[in-house]
Length: 128
Image 1 (spheres, rainbow, N blue to C red):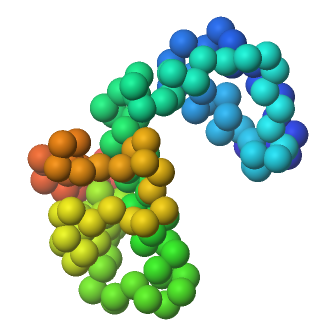
Image 2: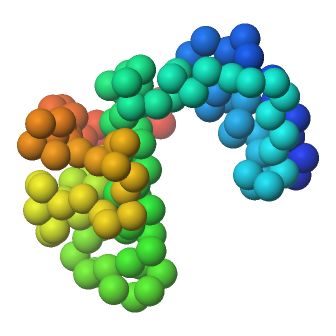
Image 3: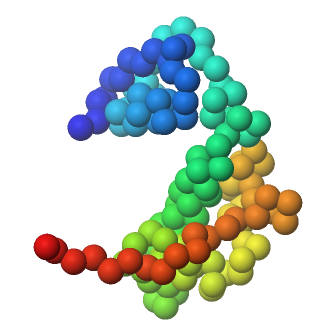
């Protein structure tokens, strides 16, 4: 459940998972009140874990896909049953070096820090 008004205390939070958990309860940034100072290095470029960076990249690509779909400009051939397969189809269509224009410079991927897709087969789901 999300909150219209979310008061958070990040001062003692020591990981990006803690920040994410505390802030994810908010429905909007405007409805979020952060008490005290906090350490932005935990979620900034220099201290950002590889898993967090990859998650930011995936979110940026999914945002681009969503915008194109909403505007009616996403080719019908770009589909996927999971976010990983959808992102893979999108990157195959655009190119491996494609980075959406709106991606902040702190998390842009490039030749030095390339976007790397997971190296595993799509897992089949079954009800047991």
